[in-house]
Length: 625
Image (cartoon, rainbow, N blue to C red; front, side, top):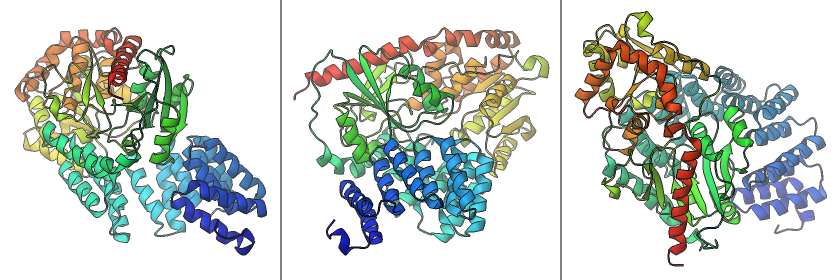
């Protein structure tokens, strides 16, 4: 502090600490707060700032202890309970956070902040109806409360109410015309409605309004869904992110101090946003749970481990966890260096919540991208990308990636058996009297070219039906009009929105044949279909993400379901629909085929991945110092 404590008011000192914190002067801000508490041991605002600092620096348990002390010293102040709840929520201790927010609400029933924060925990717990109700309550208490307005948009989207999410985004923009956050939410809703041109345009507008690496990342992620972008265009777009947001961080890169010993036990770090019951959490579990502990020590830098079966299973593994949701990229980079990570594996790439600006500081000598999707990051400090022999066949053009490719010999994904799923039912066509096609992928993958091809499949298969995952909104009318224009009665198409996990798997018992979208093919959704006995017809394209179905079908011995053209896709789908004997045989055998394939051989898969890590590590050891 620049002035003796006695010459400043306590409140002024805490305000100064807030300024220091916002400026990134964490050590100075912490010293200021501790000096305040030495003079005024129960002064709550100092605890609040001190907890923010601890949380930002990755000292989560300490942040909780600080806020519990604030509550103990000021038991009638609802704001401290609210802030304790925020800390617990940030650390993924969601149910504890709910309990604390409810205590805060009892002290101050009309606090819009507490009501909104309680709604946030409902989102984490998947209670989207409750979240929407709570956000609306917060807005009743304080009309125009911009935080609740923003969060209501996300809740409506999660609930599957895309029209509501879009309307709410425009309401925020009416209040804040330059709101990049509102444009971000609007772009996401348009993307999930399948209106990719609109989404791309909105993201470009948002990024032009305010240069933000997260907005540009969302644009790059979205471009993979769009059929108008090939591998070369995708690379150029990604290199722009590197120029804007990685190159300026070059001065922060330090020479690695890791011991150059090619065969020693390695420290492997995984960095991700959320390893819960989602595609990333489910697909990372087989690898994380089967590492050879004699050769690899594992660290995870992860924002939230959701309180679900995947998060709980991961928490039981012998892994060092660093909770990073509120931690600044600079501190994450320092933490990775302090942990002496040898091989750092980025699981997010340009998807939501990524930490590419931490990787751009080169915290580990070997850096690899994997799992979020198979493409390029464009980031100059990411040395390698993991792929497999089917996603990137030998002889392909490697110049469309900024990274070198590490090629798995069999499969890019390892699929864990989901618990509690229903058994495989007989082919529904046997009792329904007609074949039912289906696609339960995110509707973002369903562009107009896909809809037109599926209409051709239905036209070529008299009496057939189609079940399609599609959130609520007026874009459903666009789907119906598209099929009607192709001469297919829209009544043959059933649109289903988000359902709980168990109901999602049960839906496959109503589907005879799954239709893979393009240019972004299914990954874990294809695995789910196969596990439920549903064969999948796929059409690989020019990008690696378009070849996900190819690698999975090859690994289970169904290469005849891999189309070479749209015409071939229609032929394969309609031909399989007309072969009841084969449909029944596949129904009864596919789960076993998948279980006996490389896709579910977790130990073999882990050894294959580890061999790539070791190869990359040895190359670094042999490189010039």
